[in-house]
Image (cartoon, rainbow, N blue to C red; front, top):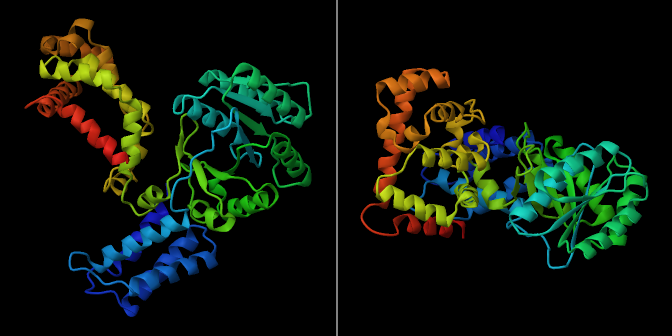
Length: 446
């Protein structure tokens, strides 16, 4: 995500590192490189020029503190301006109405239908809402089938009328059904086209007028760069939507859409899509995204992902087991599964400050724990429960059963023992250390 832009901005800051102070002379080359990096990322030239002019004005007007180098100050100023460019703060969905209606619009192929299901899953799992998905793409039977399949995956009802072609009528009847069945949120997937045309715009405008949704969200493919910004403007001129969703941000995107869509349409980016799975969306936080772009990681989002898998009662039970030195391979396996649920390993590592650049060229597969799991699953229930049983002959048998060699089994057992010691040390010396750690993590979120 934004790797190319991050590298070029980093090179731009190196120009000024080591300087005693920021002057118009030594800042000029750095600003030129920043402007070039933005344009290469498919940011409109006028916006890039205006951005660097604001950075220059702030940089030359600010004193350099003794403890802060000019290079560090430039990074701080660029971070402030990037955050401002992308909207300053995250804006929440409006969910006070009952049912709250979410109208999803966008071109065909932008990921509308997939996002509709992702949004339904987010509202159900994170907000505790009873959600109804509505299939109003009446021109593509495949879209209706896709929504039904996705609805089954997340256990959310999908309202369809496959024999009807009146999208407005379908949406009105779906809304009546939602009220009767006690649904709290209605997510309406609409038809798109390969390009903007009057028929599509008329239909979506009619749907918006008939439903009066709390949120109309425009879904756009981030990989289309500046075209995404132009399309967003055309839709906003007609629909006056409430927010933008950028999909495929995990792909080979240069970042121009994320950086400039807010300044062009004056509407917030509310979500970003970061994969194909139904849980692969994130709330868009401008400051956190600026951190990622500048290679500073995103520890707050990482903590939030961890907390989604954190169960307080399980943590208490785990603490008791650690205190008694009873942590075993079943517990170890459960921790691995919780980490896997957090998302793509490379993306997670990239959120750790200073680690992103180190792993960007590494090929870290999603099944990075596959070998570890194979070894643990090759143990008997007694061996998982009591790791002290793992003598030489047992380890040889486990290696054969898991398709690995004895060296890998020994390495895993050592890693397990090191992990157990480290976790036991965290709980040693008094009650509540783990609980305090989790409270500190919660504080980091705020």
